[in-house]
Image (cartoon, rainbow, N blue to C red):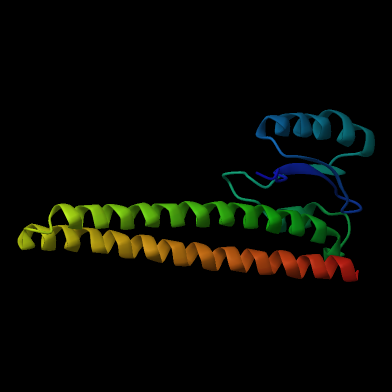
Length: 164
């Protein structure tokens, strides 16, 4: 598995991402560095410790408010990191959904085989499992759509940054 950036330090004046981490256990050290070192040396809110994997959600609008410049292009590198993180998350969800669907299909086939000689029981099993299989198929399709959307966003942001 590729290490994915989950947190980092943002310079609120330049938009530069000065440090990043890939492990949840390293996030606290970033927050402390911002609070105890960087913002003491450079002034309040000069740096911000961001987390892409927070359960509260990642807020670009909040970060825009922290920025010392009105130039919104300064946060494009951060937007790109967030898009890469979302792509990584979506890819994992897509793979998990495909595995769950495959397991559902295999279970359906096994159950049909077991009850093939009893039409009423077979119909009962099929009716119960077909709805679940349909739900799992829908989940796969939704995950695939989300993955494509985040891949496109990542690609677009990479192009935007390379053109700047």
